[in-house]
Image: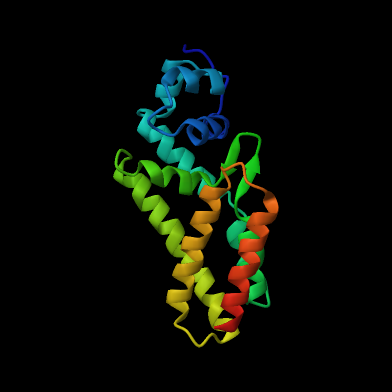
Length: 184
């Protein structure tokens, strides 16, 4: 009879996310994952094929648990939802800043194709939600094009969130973008 596991898959993922987020995929060692999760190598490998598999599951879990998308479904649809999404979007908790998904895009060249697919699907979902909000406002510009601009702006905010800049700078940038959007 084998030993009983003292860890759960979801708990391992939750503890591994901050490690991957802070160090990136390429600089995350198995030893760092063992320390963070409290699970030894054989335990990790009993749940995940390899480090790539664990990373992909972390990315999938992170994106599935994001409440930010719900901000874009609040009625009435419109600019207010987009502004709230931008203001609350970049995450900041201890050493985790910005967005794990956006941060992972830096390493696409070495990540498994599945990571690319997960991020692309997530961004497509957010873009569809942005389009619905833009259409609700009756923008004169193509809602798809405006949504792409907002998505790129959001990515930039997430990246800048890692800089040691003043918080009011981000608020000012969002306010400026919203002025432009409302005039379209």
